[in-house]
Length: 147
Image 1 (spheres, rainbow, N blue to C red):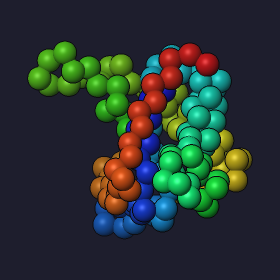
Image 2: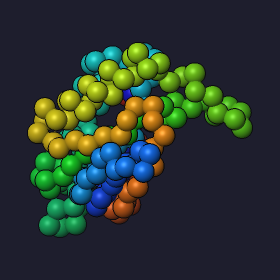
Image 3: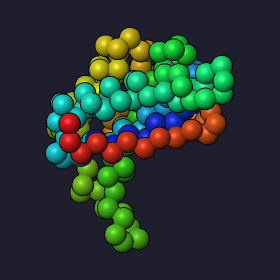
């Protein structure tokens, strides 16, 4: 699984002119699922994201996690994170098919909710417009191959 996690002061996803999900302070997570991903890999990624310490403490150090700042999570499916960029026109055969990707996407969100976080989301496979106010900016890339 791959995830791009951006620390935001706010973020939203709009589908067909309607806001589908919106958060205040927290993480915008663009989530990609690969064909070999498993539940164990998904759970490991959720644990890493939810415990990531990228919020500043009283000394200005990135030392606080999402729970400590009362943050929220907006998750958007992003199959393009598995793009084959060996040519000018990217291919997407490295991304998981919906039969695997949808359950992993839903599991990732469920894992975040089980840890007590408010989770908003996009819609798998939809044409979405994502807006965010990046804070810092701080953006972290996760590429989890094995649990």
